[in-house]
Length: 253
Image (cartoon, rainbow, N blue to C red; front, side, top):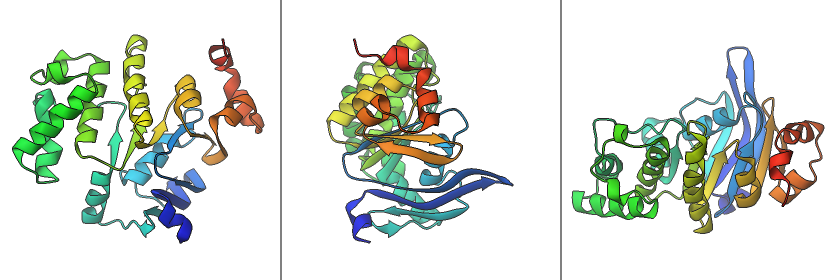
């Protein structure tokens, strides 16, 4: 229990099955404050399902998830409280198209946290400024590029002032030229000490920004180590094979 109390998040014997197909197979790990943990692996390895189980978007088959040593239940009230402390950024942005950028960033704080409109507006503008989107407060999502939408989605998550953010492939829906602007915002958050768990295909980002990298394969955590070891000295043959596809882009100049 002492270990759990030192962790922001602890996952214990997590299993997730869809019918007879077991997607997550007895996963165990914990995340400490200010850690930036990147989860990498081939498509279908269980990465996004893991985040969705943590966030409660998928119901775990068995196992436990602890937040500051307290076991999470499945009740909606408990889950909603957890989501105010552990936010999530999706690959598809999930912005409300009928709202302006400012309204998108105010809706969670006014409706969920029940803070005043003035305080909500102050927070929204603060975090939109942080991600470089303050000039667009009156724009609607359809007027924005994909990179801009994702930066708004990050600002919206930050307005809740979460202790931790989960990112589910935040750049996978973006055109290549927009990926860098989103990764730069995420790097700034990491440098600022925000605890983050990121499912990503951006190997350079995982290598350079994460404090830990987890490699998943076929529903298992195969390697969990500092990025220098994962990328320079992968122990597992599956990890070695996976990295061969990216190694030319990752060679140090």
